[in-house]
Length: 440
Image 1 (tube, rainbow, N blue to C red):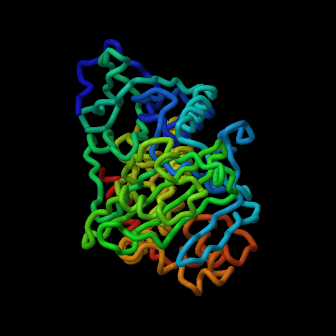
Image 2: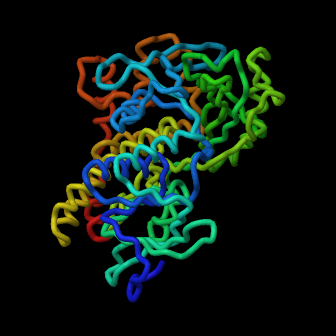
Image 3: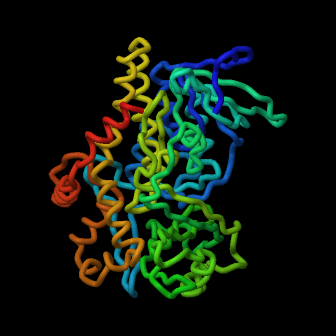
């Protein structure tokens, strides 16, 4: 960590700095720019770029893209009708709900250019994008408050300082900015691992459903995979095939490569999911879940997306939460900047953590408990038993719970049930967390 004292030449000034131009960072930059805020978006890489991801978006994610002004009817977007769950020789189709609060379709698109699209929209809105600019550490004042970041820029890695009264950390699972500010990961919260590979598959590339397999076995132990497998259509001749696992500390790690090989040997040969049709190497990444880094705001720094551990402990979905958190952060900061620097602005900035907790707190606390007691021990098979798979009402209720598809009041009975279940989760610890946030 560097001090800002005595450093002024060559500084780049803004009202807000966003570190990382993934879905969270680009969403935050876009909404800030639309609000008239001067925002610098720092990205260590270039576009397009590849990311380990399932490439699938639920209707909640589609809604965020529409709010950002993305043309989802342009070439490259593939619509989905819902999910297909496969378990124990059975399968069931769950269409996306037609509730009116969200679109009634999902989307798939490769992350290779997904992030590029969002970053371009942020720039079009007025954000200043700096590519090949890697943040190396926070700049702080005497009180330990962040006032910018140091970075190296360009192919020649020239040192630069970027300054702003507010910094948004959207630098992914590495969370380098948060770590440099002393925000360690809560090791009691779940941390999953995902691996994915692209295959050429004309038989499956236009499938209207996201397919999820819940009855996979770990190659090493023969136990149920503490997660699930997926096959997502991309509509361009390829499919995204992957595994997500949340290992239990008593069962050891999961060999995702060998487990995937064992799984794909089961699928029909005509699907083409064989080595000769592979269109990429197998790549893996960590999934920081369940708000495993807190507080989401403190000393001028807001955490969004994977940097704040915002991947859902229910499903491993992270893009939706990243974009939503980016919008919440932008709205909070834009309003706070209208207050003079001091206690009033600080009070307004603290509303970010409160709003994040209001939206996801109970849902994530319940998900963390289910992940620890069920998913990490037995996988998803216990939830997709014969009774559940045979009951449309139970299947749709579980689907809404797993995808967080019920957060707006409607007359839909399933939505009412799911929201009721989430509301039963105690809000304990909220006051203590708020006090801790304010102390920091």
